[in-house]
Length: 68
Image 1 (cartoon, rainbow, N blue to C red):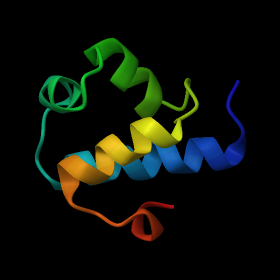
Image 2 (tube, helix red, strand yellow; image 1 turned 180 degrees about the vertical axis):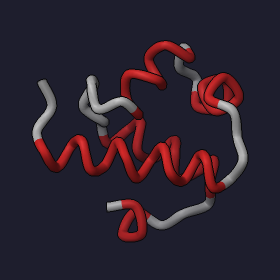
Image 3 (cartoon, rainbow, N blue to C red; image 1 turned 30 degrees about the vertical axis):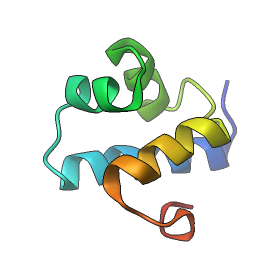
Image 4 (cartoon, helix red, strand yellow; image 1 turned 90 degrees about the vertical axis):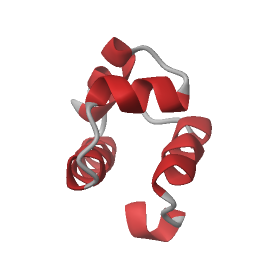
């Protein structure tokens, strides 16, 4: 189970995607993950690695300090 901080990060990543009006499947394709795994990340079921966080940053053009 993910820690509280991980769940807050997951919520932030999902909100960024929704705000950008991007479908989960589209994001998954852009960051090179399955849509199921992306869904688990955004649901707080998987811990977000630095590598995955950098992929989100690249897709959305957001600096890390604005995500965390």
